[in-house]
Image (cartoon, rainbow, N blue to C red; front, side):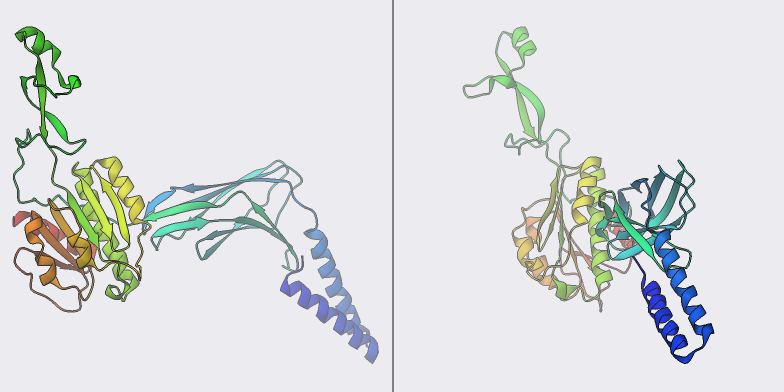
Length: 376
């Protein structure tokens, strides 16, 4: 098909030929014929359809915000030699264009190009288009290849240690045997009583003593780190502030997961993640936080923390307009409460029972977090 330049050249050539014929001047007519020949040659140049095999890879498929992600394009020519190919790939709202060197018969080229990772989110990549144009860009042929893919740009994180919860947990668990599912561990042996589950019988000890002995399981659950994100758009007049808030939430949650502690993440738009802790759970948290956005229908953060299950550490991440005194009203339900304020317009005093950290970037958060851990 003709490009806008090709259509313009064709129309101008026709008008120029008509003017030359009307006025009796051969020179304009000759220029017009040359223009029409150029348009015709460009159309013929792009008329044939090349036989191509195209494969696109994204490396890596998951990347931290701001880190490089690369699209790798493998193009194999199954026909005659081809030149004038340009690949156009779409990544979100960004169009990436890369020229492909001349492809000899049965030849292959591999080209790479940078994908944008400056904004967090699920970035659709594709469809991939190969554009073949003539040297004068008067005509071109466009064909789509492959299927769209998704690049996951996850929050940026900084290494944060686990803050002390403020409560001592015995290594063998407390004396209560009413433990949540998945947090029970062996504590001692005792005699069997009616109602005990047969699967808890310790057969070697029973054979040695002549009395049925069962394993006593106790609660060895670890304190949960609960991260609450204020998703009210009014709290985040600047989009970059909310991005920094998500980065902070990811840093806190990942730090707790990597220490093998349970993590619960919520936003005003709904629950984000509820994990038992571990490196695999850290990956889950990062993937889930990638999708968190401000929501006009989000619950107020104060209403949200009242519904949070008590215990462990509560970390509230907010922007502007949050009543710190009302957050402090729930301090008896948690071992420790930390409020992280992102670029607050003015300083504030921390109410009793609340540790307040104001920060403008992740490095400042890391230093303040380290001081908070030493001060406990």
